[in-house]
Amino acid sequence: MSQATNQSWGGRFSEPTDAFVARFTASVNFDQRLAPQDIQGSIAHATMLARVGVLTDEERDAIINGLNEIQGEIERGEFNWSVPLEDVHMNIEARLTEKIGITGKKLHTGRSRNDQVATDIRLFMRDEIDVIEVELKRLREGMIELADREAETIMPGFTHLQTAQPVTFGHHILAWQEMLARDHERLLDCRKRVNVMPLGAAALAGTTYPIDRHVTAELLGFDRPTENSLDAVSDRDFAIEFTSFASILLMHLSRMSEELVLWTSAQFNFIDLPDRFCTGSSIMPQKKNPDVPELVRGKTGRVYGHLMSLLTLMKSQPLAYNKDNQEDKEPLFDAVDTVRDCLKAFADMVPAIEPKKASMYEAARRGFSTATDLADYLVRKGVAFRDAHEIVGQSVAYGLKSEKDLSEMSLEELQQFSATIEQDVFEVLTLEGSVAARNHIGGTAPNQVRAAAQRAREALAALKAGA
Image (tube, rainbow, N blue to C red; front, side):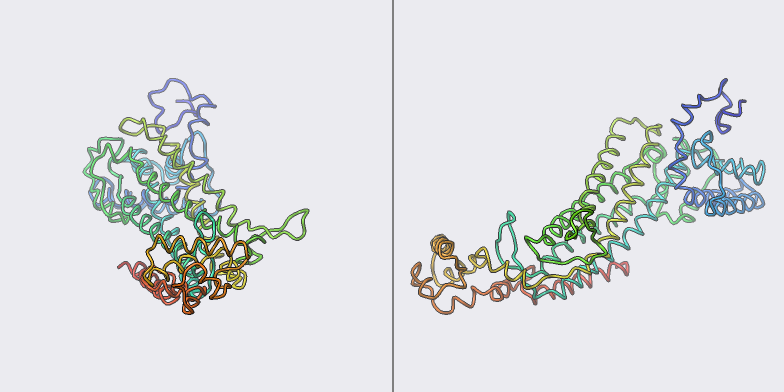
């Protein structure tokens, strides 16, 4: 057989693979990232084969020792990756055979690269999800503490990006935290479906060897083996589900980024980001650009693309494994890296946000943000809501002409629109009175914000404890 033909499958071929085709079909340049998981899976497989009597204990030990040595070579950068060997699996197996002889060729007994790669990806995803969860927890913790600290800091709340009603900065940050709490649930739910073991499904139909898949699953920390060999080798739902989670998460981070970019502008002047999260301009010395949130906002589209890539990859594939699935790794790897890095950046940055309280307060005073409070005041005095709405609308029109906020008008000025208005109206027209009046669960009153922060803190602690 030609040296250029892959020795793992070249027996029935009469000529070597074309050099371009070898490069075109190879995946080793990117799937070598799965080497730790490939070795982990192979050690568990060899251990199981020895338990059921397919390998001797001596063969098992030789394989495991050889694989551990190969792991060391890879970690030290001494491993030579070969394109003709196509992928991470055959590179490691070939090196193992070089090291321990014919026993290395016995490792592949009872499995196929189809179930091997499916297992490796799941092990990789499980590891990465655990890392991502740590960063997500850290970001949520930072948000909760920031919200608690700023429970009384007043800012304008917006609808249509127009001043609507006053809220507290803490309340706004807890809205972000709620988004992430849902994302956290999605991530943990995704992990459950990732943590199922395909190994033992072999190429597509299972194997004739007396394997024990429950042993292998236990050794690898999987919840259970997959139920159907055809589905096991061809399923990539878990990858699509992760990129769906990633897309929703990045959508949320992008919305937060948009607000951070607006708030740091001179026009809003609501917050300051530490210099370490910003960059300057090569030509305009006064600039301080919020590059971290801008880049997170930009990377969102990248992750959306990976979701569409994986959905499109799978949409027309018949059962079982197809070479198309080689294309799952690069979008999945990049989605993982992007999510992890964006979360790390936000977890570092968000707790360091410094609100400019005076600017926020002044902005909340503009735009008649307590207009709804005046309408509610009139309703409590017996005025029908639609009539109250009209009265407040007339008051706002007057304020626009006189350049006065509702709280800046005199009692006489307000009474020209309704004699029902009395001196006590100024208790609800202040920003403090407005936010304090929303004193119910989910409301923006400072004591409710603190209570919500404590509930979020307890829920996150329970999640950490596995409750």
